[in-house]
Length: 298
Image 1 (cartoon, helix red, strand yellow):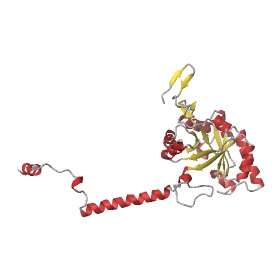
Image 2 (cartoon, helix red, strand yellow):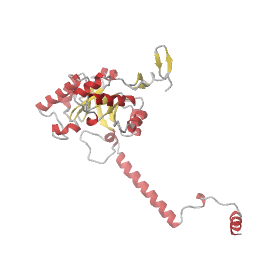
Image 3 (cartoon, rainbow, N blue to C red):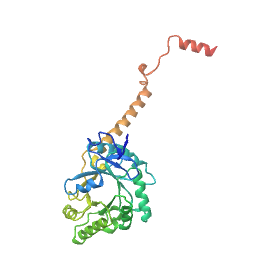
Image 4 (cartoon, helix red, strand yellow):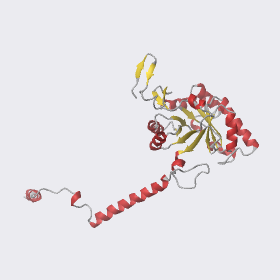
């Protein structure tokens, strides 16, 4: 991006405003543009349902941005940041939270360091399954944090495994309490997974957090679905809460069958002498070979 300095700072490309993009400086200090800021997303709470996905490849991220997906999550491994960097570059204008593992930070200092590492390569915030002290440390350091409540996969042993939670009064109250704790720790948003739709709807009314629903119906502020599910990248069975809008898995199988078939046809042509044909080879000028043989055998 070409920047022009004025007395007020930086002016991004002229078409940024026409495209509805916001001028920002990333946590890493780069001048950039985004479709939304944290403030925008908080201001939209309760007003408009937003869409969110988690792409696994740059191609998926690029397609999601071109289609108009509102926000994205990206898995971030600080030891192997290249994948997140490539996805960030593929969707440069979309608000993007980097999802960090539960065990990636063991204390407040590590949480802040991890958050800064993510921000330095273009994250607009982080999404985590951390405890309140780690969330508080990161938010106090200026890092936008999204928490995780409901059925949290890496904490699923506490809730009876990979199953829906919040279907009893005790569990419903527990989910609400967890979300309020995340709110009090300074987070701006929370991903809520596998709870009843009506429960999330009521909780969403009672928290300032932007709620991202995955497997929790339309009760949240953002509807979240993995790119793998949207694109149909894998064979059944599919998660109950997911919907496949394409069947890329079948296309991938068909492409692999075409690859195998092409190689078989090639082998057959070479074996039978059908390839190469005169149109695939270079013919020597008249007399060249006779002269060549004569000279090397003299």
